Amino acid sequence: MVILCANLPGTRQPGPGGRFCAPASEAAGFCGPASEAAGFCAIIPSMVQSAMTQHGLPRAVLEAELTAKYYGPARKRLAKADGLSESVPEISARLLFESVKLRFDRQAQIAGVGRVDFLIDGWLIVEINGFQFHSSRAAWRKDMSRSNIAQTQAYAVLSYAPEQIWNSPDMVLKEIHAVLKRGRPRG
Image (cartoon, rainbow, N blue to C red; front, side, top):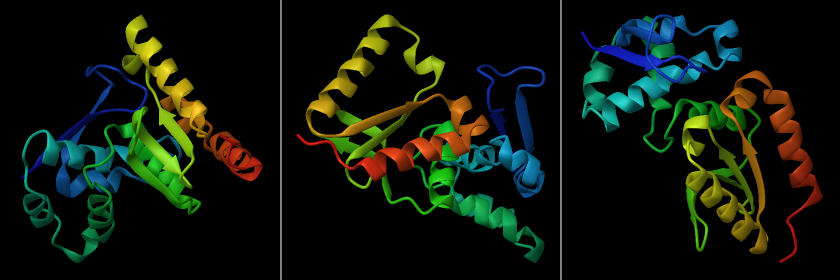
């Protein structure tokens, strides 16, 4: 039996109430409409992705845990773990963007800027940055510099905290659509 564990959305460290562990065959069953809205469902692909990329667990081992017909929903969530997203918030954002059929690339490399979380329509950069990402002034300054460089190259940039993706997805989508409607900045 494979046991998967992850920190819950909005928590920074493992601890009582901040950690979720479940057998791989049961983990997907914890995902329903209320937990979907809270960003909880993104934990399942994140747990699987972490098990594969950071701990070397082959996808085939996880798939073997989900062979019965009633594991169909769990197999769908397993398929969402593709190894590109680097965090639960990024997975949540990806699922949100896919739900409204936005066209985007993930972990896109931009000359002079570096890798960005999402590149929508080839010109709108969306970054999902948690507090831990900006845990020093140097990291914060580097991120501001990257944003400025991107804007000088005719990219628009939007940045969101994980809580905004989880708690205000409609606002996030409204802002993205507003920038897309305005059109690409002139460079």
